[in-house]
Structures are given as C-alpha cells and as structure tokens.
Amino acid sequence: MGKKRIIIIGIIILSFFVSAYFYPQMPDRVASHWNTQGEVDGYMSKGWGLLKENINKFRKYFDGFIILLMLFLFYIYLLTILWNIGFRFDMGQLMIPALGILFYYCGILIENAKRNWFIGIRTPWTMSSETVWDKTHKIGGRLFKVAGVIAFFGIFFPKLSILFVMTPVLLVTLYTLIYSYFEYQKEMNTSSKL
Image (cartoon, rainbow, N blue to C red):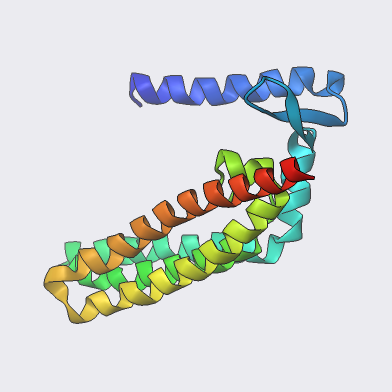
C-alpha cells in the first residue's frame, strides 16, 4: 500500500474518532450551513442518525444499488477471467450494456434519495434547501435514466460508443449542478420578497 493511500485511510479513521469523541457533546440539531454573512441558516440532526434516518427512507433503492454494483463488479471479474483464459472480445462493447443498466439504476436511486451527506446530487444549494434537493433529484433521476438508455445505443456504434456512454452522464451532471443553483436562487428571491 502506497504512502498516499495510507494517509487517506488515516484521515478517514481520524475523522471517525473525532466524530465519536465529540458526538455526545453535540446538540440534537447541529449547524450545517452558513450564509454569505457567516450566519447559520441550516440545521440537521447530528451525526450518523441523519445518514441512517435518511438512507432508511430510500433503503430498498440503496440496497438494490449495492446489489447492482456488486453484480457489475462480478461481471467485470468474469470478463477478465474469460479474456485471460483465451476468449477474445471487445471489452468496451461488453461494458456498454452494464454501464447503461448502472446509469439507469443510478437515476432510480437519485430520484428517490432523501437529503443526506452520502448519496445524491450534493451541491451547496441542494444541501441548503429540501425543496431544491427534491426538485434537482427528481429531474436528475429522470435524466440519469435517459443517460442509461442512450448508453445502450453505443452498442450499435462501436467507434463512438464512449461518446454514447460518457457525454450524456457529463451533460446530466453539469445540468443538475446549474439547475440546483438557479432553483436555489429562485427560492432565495421568493423568500426575500416575503
């Protein structure tokens, strides 16, 4: 294991210890967002309770995603074994349907994700507003499903398959980032007029 990896793992472990140490001292609702004036304008329930509570709200989708991810990795593993025992095929072409399925299910997961720090389109704007989170995830989920379907068309265009896989995902990611910003601005403008 390289030095960088050890440092990364060490930082993760340290953060868990720091969290465990301070957890009893934390209030039930902790500050989670500050506005441009440095004032707290967002709160969450503390620690893992939030993660567990919100993941439980979409647990069946999360569990389905974990199973799908394991099947995806197993599929790659099988293809690697088959290649190394003498079967020859275009690995890229065989990855396209698997990636399409993965992207499609990501859309289902995103569409059903409740606000949390672990899964979803986590921008400063979605994390600051439940409404912005919901709107962004509704549109983002649908678009990721479309990206998954488009990825399948890469099977018919082997020389362009990478474009069919990567371009929709990059566009969806960029769109949801911009969308969440503008939805948050609309919400802030509406609340400042009240």
